[in-house]
Amino acid sequence: MSKVWFITGCSTGFGRELAKEVLGSGYKAAVASRNTDDVKDIVADYPETAIPVKLDVTKPEEIKAAIEQITQKFGSIDVLVNNAGIGYFGAIEESEEDEIRRMFEINFFGLANVTKAVLPIMRKQRSGHILNIASIGGLVGFPAVGFYNATKFAVDGFSEALSKETAPLGIKVTVIAPSGFRTDWAGRSANNSKIVIDDYKETAETNKNNIRGYSGKQPGDPVRAAKAMVAVVESANPPLRLLLGEAALKGARNKLEQLKKDFDTWAETSAGADFPKDEQ
Image (cartoon, rainbow, N blue to C red; front, side):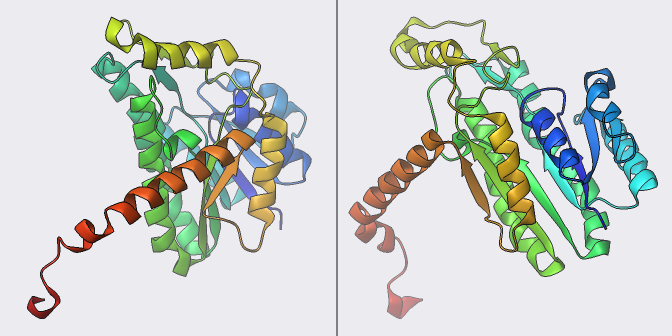
């Protein structure tokens, strides 16, 4: 039986390319977007195996309706890809609360709520695979995107805990952590803070301008990323975390070195915070 994929945020970027790759590989797919007109061309090419799904992940009623539509059409959900997300640029002090909360609602709470709604189906099946699209920014913090980092760090921690809860139930979890890819993330999908503080010019402002200026020129290929995600789902032993892009691999390895240095340097202090062994 062909697996049924449920992919959020399919209007552009990873979601769009993944939907095309999944359908082209012979799977069935629920292709979700806030506006189904954005995905009708994808669905039109696969009328028997694809359905358009209207979904704003911040709206519980749309999550419920989407899952009902998918299960009525296909009978199951075997792979959930939580891809819907946005960016936001601003130093921590510059960042506006309404923009921060909006981003958390989409990037984290929306992802969490879609996951919670799909889990009963996967539990009943005793099988499934959840791919949560995070970022290298979910492992490494960068100036100008601190609150974006926070949403993706949250996704990473959520996913790791989820993987330990669902492994005995036959449900796999993978966090996808890309670096720079040619999607809309650094373009129209990310707002700038309206507040500018000159003291952050050399850090946040510089990094924001570098990322914005690199939009459309990133080395990451969304088509190759989509193929990698399908390969993960098809693997008998998928990873908990999959880095995508050479910069992601380099950044994660540097982070490991920094962690080890701090842990080793302060190991005595860390261990010394416990009660003495004879008092435990």
